[in-house]
Amino acid sequence: MTSRQVCWELFRCRDRSCPVFGDHIVGSPALMRVDAAEVVQWRSGQLGPVEALSCQYFRRLRERGRGRRAVDRNLDLFLERALRRAASFQRRLAIYESGAEGPHLDELSLLGQFSQLIPNLGSIREVCFALLTVVTAGQGLGFNRAMLFWRDLEEARVDGHCAIGPGDDREADRIWRELAEQEPWLDLRELVRRGLAGTPEDAPLARRLRSLSLPAQEPASRFSRALWELQELHGERLEHAADRALVAALDLQHFVTLPLVRAERSLGFLLVDNRYSGVSLAPERIDVLQVLVRFATGILENLILRESLERSLARSQASAEVLAEIRRRISRAEKLAASGELSAAVAHEIRNPLTAIGGFSRRLLRSSSLGEEDRRTVQVIAEEALRLEETLGRLLHSAQREELQVHPVDLNALVRDIESLLRDRVAEAGIRLTSELEPDLPRLTLDERRLKQVLLNLVQNAIEAIEGKGEIHIETEREEGWLLLHVADNGCGMSPELQRRIFRAFYTTKDEGTGLGLALSQRYVRQHGGELSVESTPGVGTRFSIRLPLRAALPVGAARALDLDHEEPRA
Image (tube, rainbow, N blue to C red):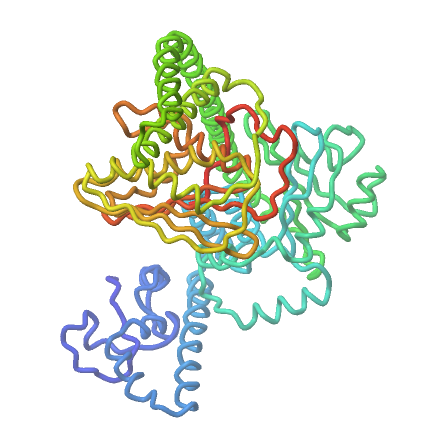
């Protein structure tokens, strides 16, 4: 007999586009007098009450009758659940009336679903909980509890890994009541998804299991043998001390262990029981469980190998980063060495004319023929010549310890000195140099030469950052416990990436720069207990800020050799 489709609705919906228009039969295959061929078609979900939920006409009827009242909505929900439960019942009834071996078909379906499910899972955790879900779910094998033990090869022990199941009788009663309320038509994929979305690791049984451990190589222990062989055991018959401790901790009575073995390697074992229902452990269920465990073991082994490779790759990358850092430091050392050789080579060439300039300017200062304006200019030349001599000395001895030469310094006076020194240069560049100095600032105990070098370097950088006409503004202010000095410009600005790098030694964006200016500047500020930071916006400008503590204690010998591996600055 050719099978025919059967509509769920008793009355004609008059939808001629419906593929089963005109056929109106409801009930089980036996009541409908449908032959065995139709049972297979019906079982595959092509007809039955659940089809009502996907029928457009039925959905329109539900929406029309749903209404706004709570009772209407509740009735609609009740109708949907009733139809789904009826569908589940009819599937079982069809198998029974067709004379088919229901359990056999269910087991094949279970194996098929499981084989499609776990290859798509991406972690050991997901595969383990998927296996435990299939073992314990009513739609699966339905064991009360499933516990997975994991072998630690390095420590030669077996640890409790994860579990699904009630922790005691009260929890078992609660779980069964919840299961009675759940949708029986949910497939295993949805059950696993819902389980992993929660925190199954926090369940009482899972927490208890993770606290347990037993020896992996103890021939007299049945649980050690569980790593390699299937066993059906009774807790009261076990005699080894480690076995009895585990039986007591998990309240084990009649249970089965199945090894997770692959290519002569054991990953652990699975333990299942029906502690709360008391249902016997059917051999046919254990046979199916063996197939599931073997399949899951292969997936787990692949995931373990993948994670091992990922860890090895991570270690290789870390080693490569360490090697790159070593190379970077060697490069820095080579630059320092080259800088030292260059400094030694040109020191005499620089020192002689510099000494002559300083001596000549000091001689002019002793002359009475200079006007007041010329005297100030020559005074600046003499001071700068002396500062350059000292800078040259520090460069040649940068690897040696040097103490700060501290004395009380007027920060505002220092700013005015810089303005006087750079007045002609900024004027030639078409740049306006302004200042806003907070009056009556307290004097700071610091090394004036070094702070002057820092401020001079910041202003010179600002000049170079301005293309065409622009403005540089120097500001001093007092903040609680600190004195602040800001140097701002409306130049080209800097990107966030550049701001993170500018304080690194030897990093420069200038064709002829050494990359030491800002690194030394930050070093000098930190020697005084302060901090040098930067704020910048591309196309808008840059502001450097020096924060100096009002009461910074300066230890003797506070200065150290230039540290090229300092932490990144705070921007």
